Image 1 (cartoon, rainbow, N blue to C red):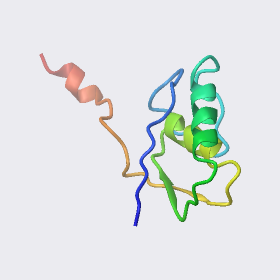
Image 2 (cartoon, rainbow, N blue to C red; image 1 turned 90 degrees about the horizontal axis):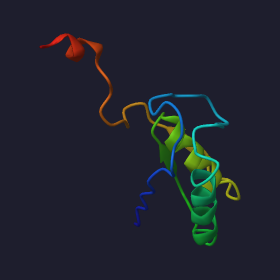
Image 3 (cartoon, helix red, strand yellow; image 1 turned 90 degrees about the vertical axis):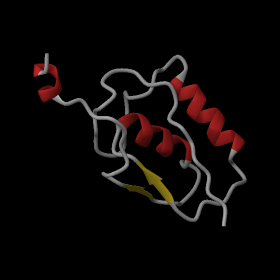
Length: 93
């Protein structure tokens, strides 16, 4: 078994937005989209049995671009997230 982890490309906008698929506007046009497309090209001969993504737009848009030529569905896993902002922490002095 091989596991391939791909970090999201350069993002733009709200890092915590969780849009529905298909995603647009979460990766920067200048670097993010080209980075995701370069990853897609580099992995064009890789067979993906499964694909998972966090719900964050930056991750999901990257996954959609990378997997575009494949028929592998992307399963969004809500528990795959990093630190989330917590308004209660701002109340602590």
